[in-house]
Length: 430
Ligand code: IMP
Image (cartoon, rainbow, N blue to C red; front, top):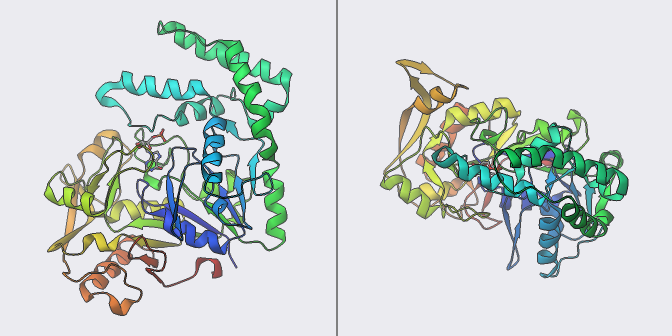
């Protein structure tokens, strides 16, 4: 029996919610290991819809332990608000069901303000962040001046750390001619929130080690996607964490051997929110059609997503850099009715054919997709629950994708409904 890590293999929004929900119903523990409340997962259980940003998807299911690992950046105010919202739907969230790593980094109000101000200053060169302070919080973490959850329990250290933090941020604000941050105001905010959030603090690596030794099934829940990874993505148009499955171990305090099966959630076409290169983007009616049929609007910011054909080059790269074992292919039904469907199999760059996305920004902007064209299908694949219900042309499309990305389709999702799924292989039984 393996533990399972679920990650996105494109630019996020691949439809992780439904699959994570299905897997979390079979797991004992669900662990978030990177990112913060920039993520957005919608779960539908029975007829109740839950929108989660920071809470692991297991929280809505009784008897599961939810864990926020050290690799996550936690905005305590946003988290407490989310807990209240989910509680209002009748879900019990207590320190028995939710544990937050005592060594995780906190997102402070100043991080959100810096994030948004910087984006505005960048003008047309903006990254298109979610404005939640994710980047600035991770910057403070690696610069070794972040305030961590455990610091809230130590009044003297907290004061020292606030001084160090403001020494840095106020110097920058002064340079920009902006108002400086007030030490007492920040300290009061932190003192006020401390007793509300500290009861959830725990020694996550130790809890997970015990649970692993007791044979419990652990699900690592990734956020965003491989192409938003700070190392392997379309830098600088990325998020500020490692989104690949390798981070599941570092971001939770478990060794790499604990991760097990890596399931890459992959949409049957491609979408992206925010700025940055997107070789197969369709700025025409077909792109519009994909967006409308796929209801491609962000769950966190409501932004319209950019849409394009499936890019096998990028997904193959995500599979290699992220160690993805198999993929869950989602939203195949959005392609129903297209006369022709295209898949990008390589790029042309300065007259040469390349089989990967180069790291340089200019090259990333200049690559031109080389397409293979498929005959579409007029039948509906929506709700299909077996291969026999799929048109032959759809099966051909899936088989060719498997070949191009060099990984098997483990699971096929044919509608947002939980049961509309074709399972080829159970990742927990690997
Ligand atoms: P940040 O994570 O808010 O710093 O945003 C950096 C980039 O990642 C932007 O392009 C965002 O749109 C994108 N991003 C962040 N979180 C998500 C997500 O959960 N889904 C899709 N894109 C995301």
